Image (cartoon, rainbow, N blue to C red; front, side, top):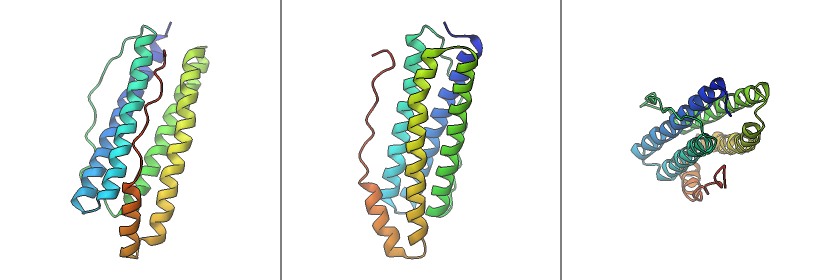
Length: 172
């Protein structure tokens, strides 16, 4: 059985995951408006991944008989800077999400909730991958930022990113 404190924290995390999705969709719209369809597609894939992350928490809460409470999602920014600045923001955002997941794990440990600790281990591993992906793209973006043909080549490469694969449901 969930404690109220842990239920509230996971509901907050569901909201954070949906905000992340909304942020990446806004970044996708930004890149579309700048005629960078590959970067727009990459951000669209990030959007889809964040929806999957939110639903994984959603399903987990329901599987354990907890109450999911959806909250209003803050509006993301409308304007973004250069591709380098956008990917700097992506990395910073993923680092923030990592800290939220770590805080949840600490709470699950304090509450003695072993199933939630197990679930959160998947998210911890996922965040290592998310930060690495953002960091890798940012490093490459910095290499070509002053070379328009390089930006266009990187845009094409980012557009070839495969769609995310949903993980198995928590109760499956």
